Length: 301
Ligand SMILES: [Zn+2]
Image 1 (cartoon, rainbow, N blue to C red):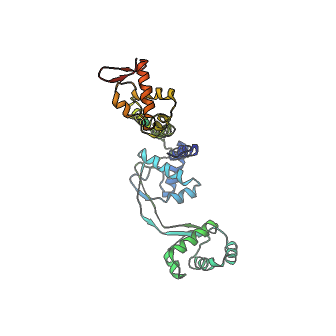
Image 2 (cartoon, protein in one colour; image 1 turned 90 degrees about the vertical axis):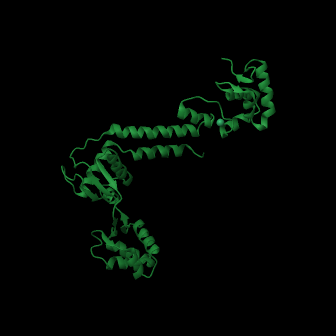
Image 3 (cartoon, rainbow, N blue to C red; image 1 turned 135 degrees about the horizontal axis):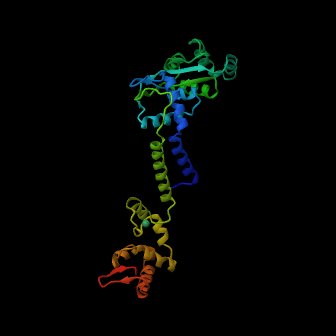
């Protein structure tokens, strides 16, 4: 298992991101209701398409925060999100005409596509216009992939804002819009705590210097169990030739219950088997381990 502190920090942050705060959820609620155009007291059982990526942009809310806040409202039974309908690709120029012109001069390979975008649609500096990448590709005798790549570059250069064709989720209101939503944070926090708990457990497992099998037995049953002798942690521990360590390992292998002599010796690592057998004999001689007549080994209580 490969991991470092950063991975755990990232996983922790991911969980926090997926569980927005009350203030965040309320802000998204109003932003979503305004976007679909529902006023207080209305909207019960109505369904609306909601492009939350655009809505998030408009309200300057991070997209992930918008999405997970909607999910939180869904968990609380306020609304439902469903797969929706396809929307058309849209774009608008966000740079002004002189910047676009300047870009055309500097990067001649973009001149044809910029000319098409400028000439084929009206009002492209004022608002989004719908278009079809395939048609532009045909007109410029290029592949559609190439056009999409160029549109993305123009977007990166902050010349245009390009929203490719997408499937807007459909939002169904299960409660009419309210002016002052009261969010049951207890329920949401419980889910969050559960996620954080299980992350903590996985972290313990990864950083564990005890037997991995014993870890899971304890995790699921709360029972302590003896070392398995064959996981990576056990192998490392049991392959050391230090007699003191071997003596304590043998005791760990016996655990709380009694164990058959031969069953125990099967758990000894091949590399140090002889050494383990010798130390086991001396432990029995010293009565640090008790051997019954039926060849059962047990630790003195
Ligand atoms: Zn083990």
